[in-house]
Length: 184
Image (cartoon, rainbow, N blue to C red):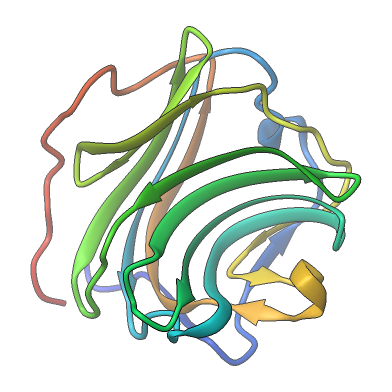
């Protein structure tokens, strides 16, 4: 996205991990999570869900927080960009916006909470909103990997740049125009 390099995850074991921090606990206040992503491959279609995990913080297969792009069903119509929280095997919330990505295209993704409402934007356009608090975990934060989701290990196959967590501030209050990059 910027300069001549970005994070490249090849879908076969690349990921970044860092220890737990209060920086990842977004609680009940305003926040912004945003990043740039360019997929090398999209989740495959089929009868069970397949996914590209952007980031995740997980305790086990029943307790996790993650941001993913996934597909369900063989008709290719159930593609979703999802911010998801699960505790004790039950979904606390799922901010689930239908969206069709393409390979080799940079997208700006932002999830913003203001006044208790979380909205996800793709290239500055809202795809879905939900009212919910965020969970807290005391385990590592991973970019590009989720270990225990439905008993599978998932890795990311894309370029990622400028992942930013902003606690206490909603950077985008309505649809906006990000600087969109072409090529690379």
